[in-house]
Length: 337
Image (tube, rainbow, N blue to C red; front, side, top):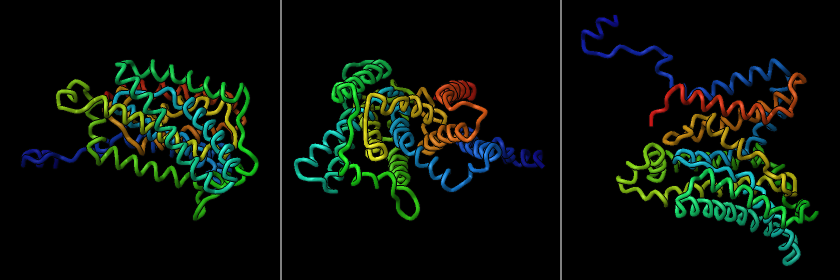
C-alpha cells in the first residue's frame, strides 16, 4: 500500500511515534509517570488535599518559570530570581507595616502593596536588563552579582534577622494565599492567569517572535532590524514582574522574609523551564512545558515526603541531576537553532 502511495506521488503516512513531538509531549509523559509512581508508593498521593497542595506549592516557581521562559528563549538567563523574591518580599512587608501605621490596617493597604510588589519586581528586572544590555555583559555574571546584592540588602534591612508582618495586617493578607474561589486556591487562579497571558504574548505577538528570533540567531535578528537591547531588557522586566506576582502570594503564606527567603528558587525556576522543553541556548520556548516542569519538581518533592526510602534532604541533589539530564537530552535530540 505504501508502494502504491509512493507511485502516485503521495507521501505515505508516518508512524505515530514519528508524528508525536517528543520535546512537547515528553514533560507531560514524565508527569504522568511520576503520578503513577507516586500512587504506587503511597495511595495518599491521589487524595484531593495532597493534589491541591502540590499544585498550590507549584504556583510560586510556575509564575517565575513563565518569566524565565521569555529570558531563556531570547538566549539569556537569570540567577537572581530567588534573591529578588527575598528583597521584594522584605520591602513589601516594611511598606505594609508602615502604611498600616500611617493610614490604618485596611484592605486597601493590601491592594496597594500587591501592586507595589509587581512594580518592585519589574524594577529589579529592569535593572538587570539595563546592566546586561547597556553594559554589554554576560547575563550569567550580571545576575550572579545581583543575586548577592539583593540578598545582602535584605539582610541589611532586616539587621540580620527576620522582617515580619504585624498581626492585624497578616490576618488581612492571609486569605490571598489560603482562601480560594470555586474550590480552587487563589494562587492557582493567579498562576492560570499568568500562564494564559504569557502564552498569548510569547506565541501571538511580535515581541514573542522577536524573542524566538534573537535566541535562534542574534546576528540575523540584528540585521533584520530587531531592537535587540530593547527586547532583551523587556524579557528581564517580565521576569521581574513574574517574581513580583509570586511574592504577592508568597508573603501572606509565611508573613515574613529573611535572608533565606526564596533560597534555591533560581535553580528550581531554571530547572522547570529546561525540563519543560525550552532550549537552554535559546530559540525555542514552551510556556506550558515550563509549568509542567514546575509541577514535576513539586511532585518529586512530594513523593520524597510520602516515601520513607529517600531523604527529603536530597531534594536539591535530585533537582540538580534533573537539570543536567535535561540539558544532556537536549543536546542529544539536537534542538534546531
